Image (cartoon, rainbow, N blue to C red; front, side):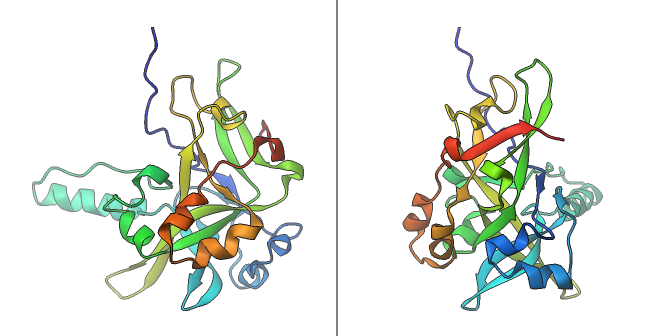
Length: 233
């Protein structure tokens, strides 16, 4: 009997960001100045501030953005507000990843995608669970030689009641069924998906193109032969 895949598996909720060299200078994205002004924790978890690069007012800018498009603190506040008003509280959502097949239609992510608010999310590797031994062994996944790379993402700016602005972002994921590396991750029967690693030659177009279909065409799996996966240290 063929069992259907479990849809909606969360892909990357923890990754390693490049920090001091070797790492940030290799990407040539203005991260050194950002690191000197506001250093970040290299191990990135939900809602942690992480280095992000986007086109702002016609210039490529590096800034810190929270990992998770809809911060959990805001979601919790909405839940408490609903309870206080006697309404059914909304469910907590995981917003670190956004599916490529949901980008244009999603009420949450669609406005950013249609407005061209695409970003680069620098990483050294991501972490994923692997159950090949029958139990979970966390693996780190990156490029050969563990050189830094950039993941495709979308971002937005949130404004608090006091007028303070913060940025948030999410990684875009694509189908990874049959991929030699990513199909090994997560439990058997879970849907297999992967973040999108962009080639350096595509970074500028990813950030600047006004053609949404041209941007969507870049959402491809990275060649597995140029990647490596190993148990996390």
